[in-house]
Length: 136
Image 1 (cartoon, rainbow, N blue to C red):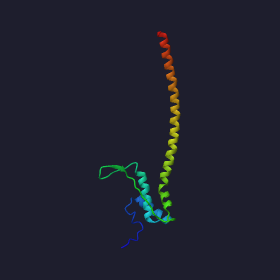
Image 2 (image 1 turned 90 degrees about the horizontal axis):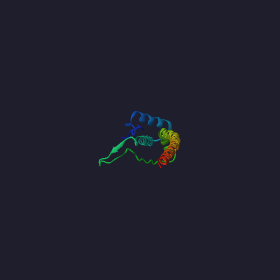
Image 3 (image 1 turned 90 degrees about the vertical axis):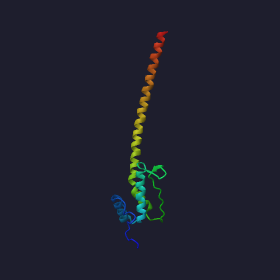
Image 4 (image 1 turned 180 degrees about the vertical axis):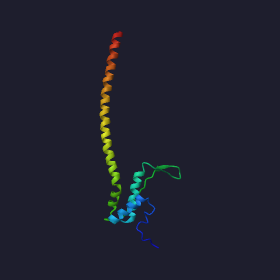
């Protein structure tokens, strides 16, 4: 017997994921399997740097998923993926911007430190040279 519920693929998802799947299906009419795949891919991207999986052979690896979607043109593959990965891309863009600002500050501090360091070494050299001349 076939189940007419279009969300059979997502009925075990946590509420937020299930609600997102319902919202996406209602708004863009994408196939439920495509929506579920996009949700799982986005969750995997977010978690893979935080969670490791220990396999039966004892090896550990990130909880990455490798998914492939085969669908005709116009079935909203890109729309689904973009919807669920937009916050990830925005986070990455913000993190990149923050990194560039922090890097510029670090480089400025490094130049200042190197200049001070060079000046102090020159002073130490001059004092040591004068003391050496006074000893002779």
